[in-house]
Length: 209
Image (cartoon, rainbow, N blue to C red; front, top):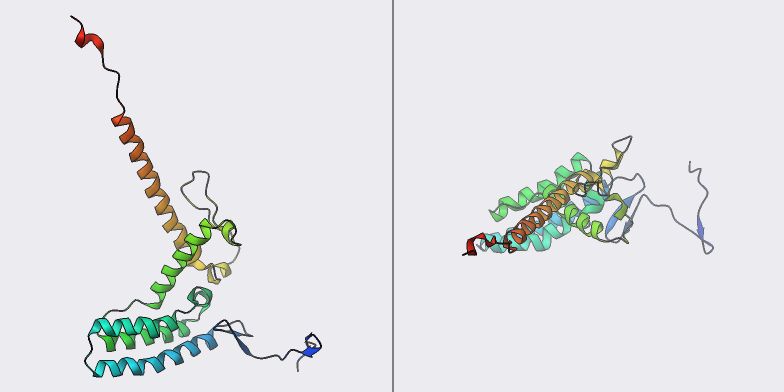
């Protein structure tokens, strides 16, 4: 029995559903991503038929890989930074199974879903760290040394499964730290080069008669 009163908007009752598609993503009432992943896997399996058809016509592996990335990988990784971090192990296995099937058909190595997720999180983190107007910009706080980012302090591990995720927080900080280290080393080398090229005061003792 539903104990929650109905919600009205402009006099109309809002229907309660188990899942709702918003901007291409299936949002479930139980806050899981199984429905969304199942929908993506179903669409990807339909595209695998065309990949097999191209394979039967003896097209090269390069063409098959390009077709996969345009029609199948783009579906599996749609808005992946939003939902993949909280996917269950079975959902991730189902997604990766599609990649393995396509890899077997194309006869060429294909990037894993986990790899794509990490790469896109890194790219997103770089944009957030440079955008001072972004709501998550405050998550990236430099340490007093100016070379490392401060880690978030939490009492539970739940934050590691959220959108920011373990990759978004931990691995991204490592990447940014490496970039800062490279910038620091380059700056240090420039200073040393300038100090080397700077003309030094020559002793006049060599020119005395």
